[in-house]
Image 1 (cartoon, rainbow, N blue to C red):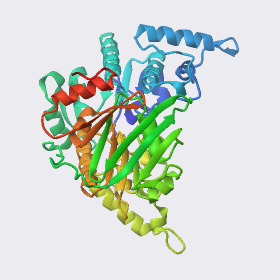
Image 2 (cartoon, rainbow, N blue to C red):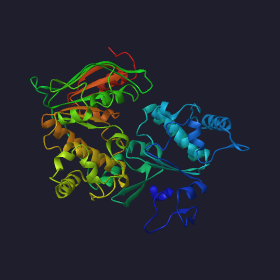
Image 3 (tube, rainbow, N blue to C red):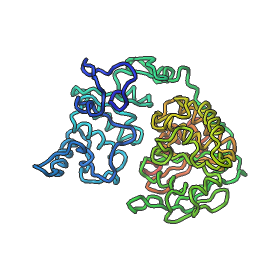
Image 4 (spheres, rainbow, N blue to C red):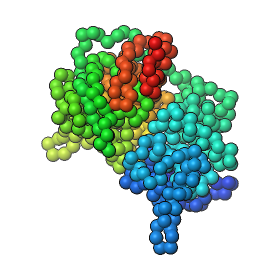
Length: 464
């Protein structure tokens, strides 16, 4: 995608548009030729409004002055035309992820894009927002635009695409008509062999297992000061995965940040192995055995300009401190071992994290938590497989189950219900900042349980 859009120049080969070779690929040339890209990690300026973001770099003017009123009118009209309604004058920092996604798409359409490249556009959307987006993309294709959708969600590929191209290790391995293939066939092409799903054992968590992570009456605010969490009580035992289900925006982010010590709760307490760590810093919680896989790997998980091995060092520098300098040889050795364990690509510990795909960046973040010499008491894991292909997701699931088997407590927040059902011993439903239900999740038939949880996620009363 970076090559198609002109961010990265190709080492060899060429990019053609309507049969014409683009001699000097660049972002400005792509925009001039009406190619637009919607990035997985939004390329928006949070302090600017939606309208200001859309026209940034091509601002409409009235004489010598910026004409923001015109920009707002044009954005509102474009949103109405494509059923992508946004409030043009709201700052991006106040928008939901679905609304920010609409701004990204409208930015591309406002520039008149005839070719749209979308990178994991549904990774942060609710099911309803996904349906709306797909309806818009179908309309755009019917209107003559070319849409390139890059996604790891095979059901979405089969629901939307006419043709599917599968890449593996940097090569095209198959191009198939979507209507004549299956998700199993696509998965096999993606990973090179049959996908074997990891299985959680049927044995229940021992009743006497110690509580490793506990939240008591936890309440927390959003950035705008409104209440996001209201009195959360949860206890996770060693050897247990407790999943949190809920439509995004119901307090999951604040739950993770407050537990990790990245925001100060309004009320309540966080306990780790019985020790109250509510006032402890994130570093102190880490030293006491709390691991954290953040939901936004760019904002809180990685320093993108650091190498893979330098990112693995974050929060662990003391482990590699020598008399005068870091033990670079041991760091390199450990980094290479983690790269091999999680199949990080490229297998180069000196590669900048920025050059890795989203899925491989996620492996680095998770690998850092797995590599602690003293082990984990509890792991706070938010959206661990967001933007990750089926093979990498299976590997991450396997590692989470190993952590569970080692006796750690895992608090798993995921927008993927299938992931929660596959991994969790118990599932709690979060709606509008409150726990609406807590269920055991035994292996086996789950249709009734799924219906009950789905109803609570939407704020409906549980069926009798």
